[in-house]
Amino acid sequence: MTTEETTIEKFETRDAFAEAFRGQRNIDAADVSGVDLVGLTIAAGNLAKANFSNSDLTGAKLAGLNLEHATMQGTNLSGAKIAGVNLESADFTNANLTDSTWAGVNVEGADFSGADTTGATGIGVDWSSAAVPPDPIPETKTVDKRLIAVPVAVVFALFGIVLVLRRLKK
View 1 (cartoon, helix red, strand yellow):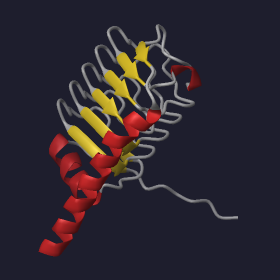
View 2 (cartoon, one colour; view 1 turned 45 degrees about the vertical axis):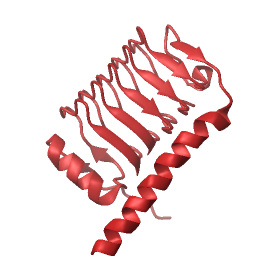
View 3 (tube, helix red, strand yellow; view 1 turned 135 degrees about the horizontal axis):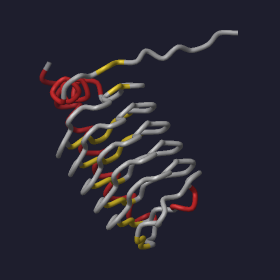
View 4 (cartoon, helix red, strand yellow; view 1 turned 120 degrees about the vertical axis):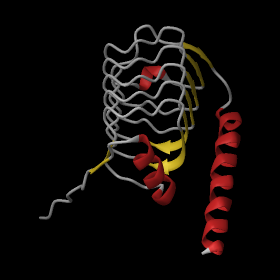
C-alpha cells in the first residue's frame, strides 16, 4: 500500500503567490498563511488543501476556484466577493466574513465555528450543508442554480481563451 505525499509550497509574499498562481493555476496544498492579499483577484484554478490561515483577503475576489479542504482559520475575508467556488470541507474557524458576498458557492462539510458573518450575504448558497453552519446564517437569496452557472461558465471560457493565447505566444 502506498501513500500519496503532498508537497506543501510556502509563499511568503503576495507577489510570489500571485506570480506562481498566474503561471500554474494548480497549486495543491499552497501555504499562503499570514500573507497580505488585500484586494487580490484569484480566479479559475485549483488550490485544494491551501492554507490561508490568518491571511488578509479584505476585498478580494475569488471566482471559479477549487478550495476543497482549504484552511481559512482566522482569515480576514471582509468585503470579499466569492463566486462559483468549491469550499467543500473548508475550515473557516474564527474567520472574519463581514460584509462578504457569496454566490453559487459549495460549502458542504465546511466549518464556520466562530466566524463573524455580520453583513454577509449569499445568493444560491445552501448554508445548511455545512458541517458547522455560520451563526447567524447570512441573508441568503435563492435563485435558479442555472442562472449562477452561466457567469461561472463565462469565467472558465475566458480563462481557457487566455491560456490558449499565452501558449500560442510561446
